[in-house]
Amino acid sequence: MRRKSLPLLLCGFSKIFVCTGLWNKRNYNRELLITCCASRIGSCGTQRTVRTHSLLKSAAGRSLRLLEVPNKKLAINAHLMPTLFYNALRKQQVFRFTTSALRGLLRICSTTLLFSTVLVLASCGVLPVNQEPSPHGGSNSPEPTVIGPSFTLIPSQARLQAIALTELPGYGEDNQLEAWPALLKSCEKLPLQGTMPRLSVVAWQRVCNEARTLFVSEANVRAFFLQHFEAWAVSGADGKSEGVLTGYYEPFLKASLTRRPPFVVPLYGPPDDLLTRTINGERVRGRMHNGQFVPFYTRAELTPVHGASVASLRGKEIAWLEDVVDAFFLQVQGTGRLLMPDGKIMRAAFADLNGHPYKSIGRTLFERGELKSLDEASMQGIKAWTRANPHRVQELLNTNPSFVFFKLVPATEEGPIGSLNVPLTERRSLAVDPRYVPLGAPVWMSAQHRGRSLNQLALAQDTGTAIKGEVRADYYWGSGDRAGEEAGRMKAALRLWILWPKVKIPGSL
Image (cartoon, rainbow, N blue to C red):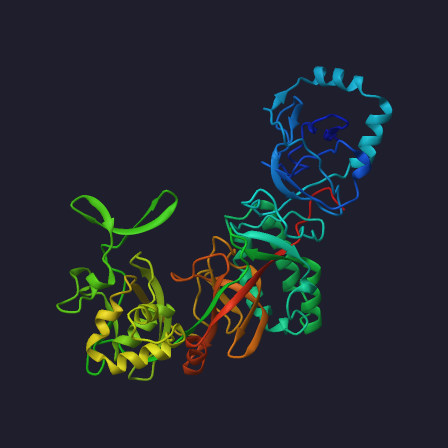
C-alpha cells in the first residue's frame, strides 16, 4: 500500500510557515487546505477569526514547498485546530526547497519540538468564511460561531456569518414538514449544479440520499435539518442584514388562442431576432442592426402608445387576453394559468425577456405624485389608478422597459416551473438573487406581513428581473385571486439565512 506523505509542521518561527508534501490524489481531495501551524502551541484550544489573503492548496509534485501564510479572513473549526497566528507586517513570495534541503533544515529543530508539534497539531484545519473584512480596517461585530467539522463552501458573494439553527427567529414554531416536498424537488437539481465546489456537491448528494429514505414526520424532519445543516446569516457588503420581501403568485385569467372580442390583448412568444450573447461573463440580450449587436427593443418600442407594434412581434402572438393591465401583471409574475373558452386550461410559462432592467410603475406613480405613498403602490393600488385613468395606461406601462415573452405549456396540479426547473411550492418557494443565495438551497426567512410574523423555512427555487441584492426575495403565494391579494400587498423588511449541508472532510472524524 502506497503511503501518502503528511504535512510537516514548522513552528516556533517569527513568521508562520506551512510545509506540504505530495498528496495521493486517489486518497485525498486536492481542494482541501493543508495543515497550518501556530507559532505558540500553548494557544491552541480557543476559537478565533484570522485574516489571510488566500487559501493554500495541497502540493502537486514530489518536491516539498515551504509556504508563508498570507492574509485572508478565515474561521477556525472548533473541532480542529482553532488558532492560527501570523505576521501581518510583512508578506513574502513562495519559496521552493528540495527534499534534501528541507531535511537539513529539519535537523536543526530539536526532536522534542518536532514531535510535540506534530502530536498537538496533526488534526489542524481551517474553514473559509465567505465574508469580506470590514471596510474600516477592523470589526466590532461578534466573531462567528463555527458549527460542526465542515468547510463553508457556499457559492455566494454575500457576507455570511454562522449561527446555530436553534437561534433562528421562530425556529421552533415553524412546521418544517410543509417545506419537505420543496426540499426533495431541490434535491433533483442541486447535486447537478456546476457552480458548486466538488465538496459541496458531495455533501448535497449525501444529504439528498438520506432525505429520500427518511421516515417523514414533523419531528424527524426537524431533527434532519439540525443534524445535517448549518445556518449562515446573509448581509450585504455594507454589513446591512435587512432587505426587502415582496410577493408573487400565478394569476388565473380568461384567454383565447385566437383574436376575438373581448380577447384583443396579445401575449407574445420570443421574437426570431432576439439573440443572447455572453459578454464579460454576463448573458446579454440584443439584436443585430447594420452588422452590430445592439440592445433589443424596449417595451415602449415594442408596444408604442400610438401605432403598431414592431415587426419583430408580428406573428408571435400565442394567446389573447381581455385587459392590457392583466397582460402587464402577467409579465410581472412571470407565469399564469389561462382558461380557454372551451374550458381547457393552459399555462403561460416564462420563455425569455428583452434584457432591459425592470422599473416599478408603482414607484413611477408615486414619484409623479399620482399616489400619496409607496404603500399605495401595490398591485391593487395600481389597478385602481388604471381604472380611473384608462387613456394613460399604455404610457404608464411603457415606463417599465422590461418585456417578458411566454410559451404555452400544459397546466398541471403542481405549481409553475421556477428558474431551478422544478415546480414551485405554495408559500415555501422563494425567488432570490442567485449571486448571493444559491438556487435550490434551503433558506430561513424572517419578516412581518399584515401584522403577523413570517418566520419559516423556504427553498430558493426561482429568480426575477426585479429581485436584485443580497437580502432580497420574492415569496410565492400560490395560484388564484386569494394568493394575488396577499402577494399584491406584500412588502416587508426581511432577514435571510442560508442553510447549507455540513461538509465532511476526508480523513477527519
